[in-house]
Length: 275
Image (tube, rainbow, N blue to C red; front, side, top):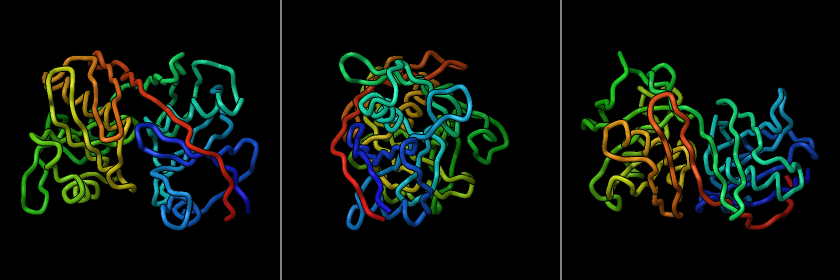
């Protein structure tokens, strides 16, 4: 079975994008993880599938992590998605309405090539994240291998834990992040962000993504970090989020308001793989 694909990235968070409108596909978890494998497959953090929408939206957008598991949302992927459907001539609409497992998003392709995405309204109730807690709080204490750490917990269509650190380069992203990702208080696992606050409009961020490990950038992770910082009166909107892959701009006006994300989306190459 031959599959046509496009390799893209948003700040180094890289994707294999597959048109499932003009080619019919049904891929197993094993096949998906093979595609994502950087040694034997194409290599990527996530696989994005462009499908027809079932409702009134323009497209349906499916996201699979490198381990082959399907997830609800991906901010960097959303920017690549809208760039892809325009570049491939699948639509002329701008903005584009896109169904995801977590709801509707409306990415807009800007004249300078960057993409702005309404990432939706963050959710804080523990049951909606999901996170095991008796009640909603600004921060929570979490036991990790006999050590108590402080996190913020929220959903940006997918679950996030945010840790504030003093030195981003010394943050225990790989070791502690992997333990928090699979912590029993997060029944669907969690993306773990480590945020260093530079000033009220600038942060540095590293994210350990569930099913992928640390990535060079995470769009929903950037949104979650800014929301957590604004809620704790540590940040003022808009905020420049500096990741290892580059910069995102995140705006959020507070409770019950959408989070807006702006950043680049880049096509690397097109190809065909034989599964």
